[in-house]
Amino acid sequence: MTAIFVLDVPENEGVVQVSERDPLLLVEKVGPYFRIAADGDPDRETVVEATDEPLGPGHTSASGEIVIDRRATRCRHAVWYSALAGLQDARIVQHDKNALRVVRR
Image (cartoon, rainbow, N blue to C red):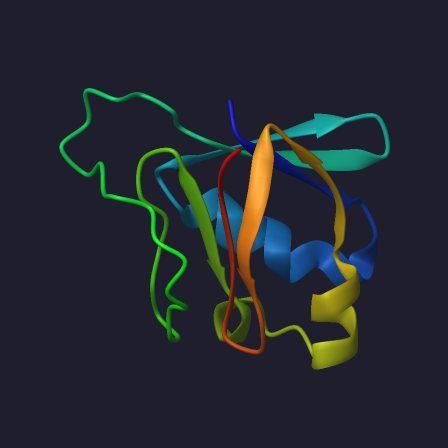
C-alpha cells in the first residue's frame, strides 16, 4: 500500500485534516507520525493512469494515488515543503506550491 508519513505536530494539522476528509485516503496514528495511505483497491471505478504531469489546485486523490492540495491545507510554503517525513512503497511525482502527489513505486 502506498503511504506517506507526516510528523504529529501542530504545524502539520492541515495536511492531516485534508487527508482525513479525502474518502480514498486512510489516516492512522503510528507512533509520533500520521500514516496517510492510498486505498489501493484496483476494483474501484476511480482508477486512473498515473502520469508525471503536475496537477493544479483543487484536485483530490484517485485510487492508489495520494494527492493533497496545499491551498486546502492552509499551510505556508516553509511548512508545506517540510511536512513529509517518510514514504512507504511510494514515489513522489509532484511536490510544488500546488500539490503533493504520490504514486505507487
